[in-house]
Image (cartoon, rainbow, N blue to C red; front, side):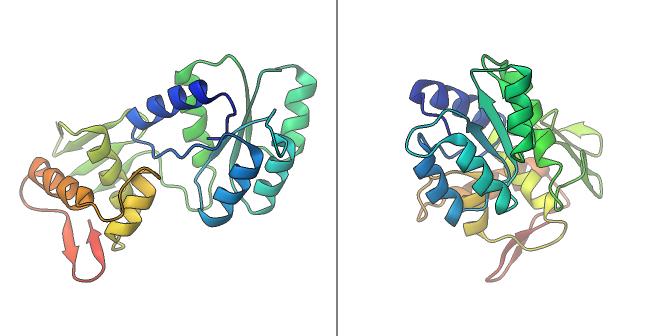
Length: 211
């Protein structure tokens, strides 16, 4: 999320993280361009009126590298919305906004990716609805934490591909995560216990985990 109002950015980030999203924050256009140059984000939520590099220029740069952009602005006139979409933004949301709508729009923009996952992820008797944040096994709802849900969602979306602990740390956690932590292993162990038998998460030697 790129937003120069620090308190707003941190407030939105807390809400999105509760929804199982990993969120990095940038507070000006230059920082945004530096971060997106080294990290591939599913969606960039971009304030239009930014210091150092204007949000319009950031948007054009992100569109050129095929990054999905949801643009935010305090000005919600028809002309502003048309301008934002004309620059290549995937969606446009005026401030003030409801968190529920922002969450829904982020998920909708993410689904437009060529590698987007289906709306409901299934494998065997395991089913996960990312929008509703509900996972079931054999029809029984699983009591998963937001982070456990996010890990399960990522593993299911990988569709049988082995996912390394480093990849999980980068894609499910965020920049505040310690790369030397055992958080991923601990979360996988809790997830395995809650998923029950027969086990569905396999450890692939020197490769990571897969379902």
